[in-house]
Amino acid sequence: MNALLSAAFVICWSSGFIGAKLGAGSASAVTLLMWRFLPLALVLLAVAPARASWRGLAPRDVVRQVVIGALSQSGYLLTVYGAIQLGVSSGTTALIDGVQPLVAGALAGPLLHQYVTRRQWLGLGLGVAGVAVVTSADATSGGHAAWWAYAVPFLGMLSLVAATFLEGRSRTKVAPEAALTTHCLTSAVVFTALAVGSGEAVPPAEPAFWIATAWLVVLATFGGYGLYWIILSRSGVTQVNTLMFLMAPVTAVWGALMFGEPFGVRTALGLAVALAAVLVVRGGTDSGDRPAERIPEDPAKAVTGARR
Image 1 (spheres, rainbow, N blue to C red):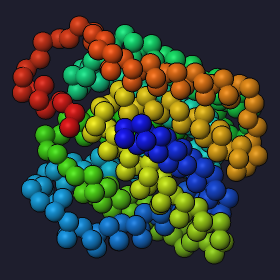
Image 2 (image 1 turned 180 degrees about the vertical axis):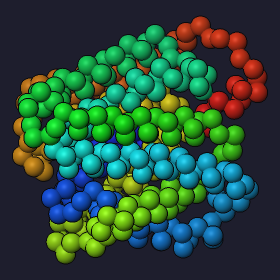
Image 3 (image 1 turned 60 degrees about the vertical axis):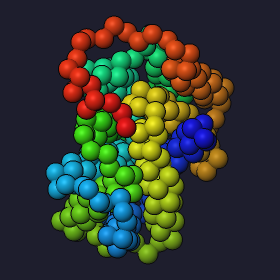
Image 4 (image 1 turned 90 degrees about the vertical axis):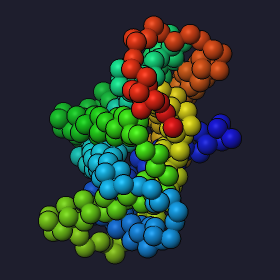
């Protein structure tokens, strides 16, 4: 079951980069994001009161989820879509996003008391190498994007990492459907305000825009984003973020199939290395590798930092 969830997560999450490219030619980033989240949030909000998942949530728990949603959805997606519309390719955006596991792995110990084993560090290093192999040619091809545009998806990656650790330190278990509803409602408010404020709220009549919107709602939001938090609760920060190493190679495959982008020996090699990285990291936990030396911690903090 975990393997199937992981495979579905990789496919659905990488579809978000393709969906952003599908909609990039028909509307601005804030327009596409507004119409991706506004109808979705209204539907989720309509059924939310009838769900038992909201019982027991205090106002501070909801506020925390609003902040997590603003970081993990609004901030992350705005930078990804913005970077692609600035000329950064989907592959390079996925590459920068792929640095997330290394950042999360380095911070998991001091923030969540989830210390990374030597074998897992080896896997993280392999993952970085695999992602770099896949997208190095694109990153150095001298495209149309300005040099500063490459920093935009990096900020989005940091935003998602911050949301992951903020959720990890929460004392309250929040059901995935309650979290998804809160996050989508938060994003709907943020992107609607941005679109209205910039005069870009009116959607285009082009079919490509609505195809991209439906693509993003079904695959990226329900599939990718929903599975991210489900797998995170089951496997922990290091393991789920290791799957991010597969996003750049898989995005390259999507691009080749849908847009005719080149897929050569280098891409195939990078995909193989990234797959090896995932096997190394996930196998490290199963094989019982000893974690690195841990700093003594307060028992209460250990409970707080444990993954749910």
